[in-house]
Length: 590
Image (cartoon, rainbow, N blue to C red; front, side, top):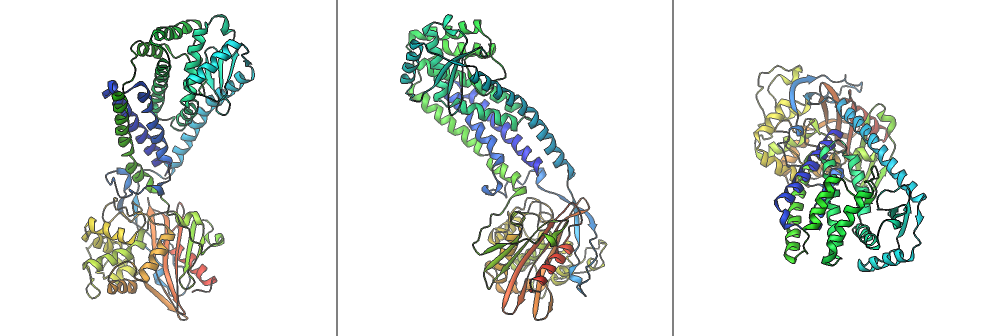
């Protein structure tokens, strides 16, 4: 969901800014000017984290306390579509429990639209600033004064810079600035030679060249990009204002390191003298300017006045503090993973795979179909992206709840009956005692919820890890996590898991594997045997997620399949089964 992306971005950015500000305050005397500035680079990393695909995170089962990670079953049951006319195939019916999510479905789209509108609004001044930079570049005249050019080369040698830079002056510039990525420009105001001494020019060149040496031009672009992406978080704007101030203080410090002590006062006076002549140019966000706001200028002058050469111990302390701050920022990755896992994908790549167009079977649905021919060791897939996208397994997960219950001894093949709890359900087949076979045939949710709750979460987590079941996330709560909640699995994974179940590669007892296989046998015809399970996800009384997974045993071969369909409504297991059976029939499999 887009809203979860924004939430994670807001949390990560705000927490990181708080950490950086706290570190700067607590250890202000133990951080050099350069490392005060370097701390802000951690913010760039944190701002990027929410945009990293969830598949790169491995912490999906953490942070179960998050309120938006789970859904509550409402006790409302949604009747599904009538059985398609395919003979006497009662198994094709499916039943689901509706869950109610706290936010309406349209809210995600609304938030996305608002964010995009804000994005567009803040892109406009950035484009205007970029156009002004281009105008300055176009109307700039190159400095020809030999003394200034010689001074430039001396400053470059002092800072070990070999790249050519263009020095010029422009009527559209009020303060010295540097800009450009491929070609770098240092631009002065028009007629600057008439009122600046050579010492003033030297100090300005050293300042701007240090900006170049520290790659501050690239930093400017990153600041603009992230300010636009995070326009909704005022803390990000505040942080970048502080970062720019720390950058100027760091640059001042670098200049002072290159000067003799008797020149410190002259450098400070140059900045003060310059500010009397010009004002800071606004709306140019891609360049590094010599002049700051009055408030920032005061802080810079104070730092210049109190400047001391950096000791080795201060440098060591600075690095240690930076590492500590980095660890605190990195600690958010599990949180981001827990939020981002809502849209996780399972990357699948096999040489023996054909991708085919089956869209005619899925009209009106966002769906996928995965088929695996065990004898040929060959996959056929429709819709690669959706086949890898993890969604709630809903009732298809009952196969594995039954297997876990067999394995733990909660039920056995000969003793699997649970007493009906007396609650009246709208399906007659639910309102009676159930054994595992009858409960699987009628998809009796209360039966499997009871089995689920009889197992402890630690054992369930261990079994899911043993299976490698999707994102292995149980944080939605026992009895609920598999019903449009936190547990997610992709169609490709469903097929791979069914194949492992069928061939007993999962490490479970053979008798329990056979027992669960018997519960999902559906029908047999023309020498082919069909086994499988439907599943339906109902959210706010709308069926939004439909599954049919299973396998066909035919002529010494086994074909494993998974069909999933998504829509705002009318996506259910019955429809998924109808689509799957049509595809299997046309392929001559069943």
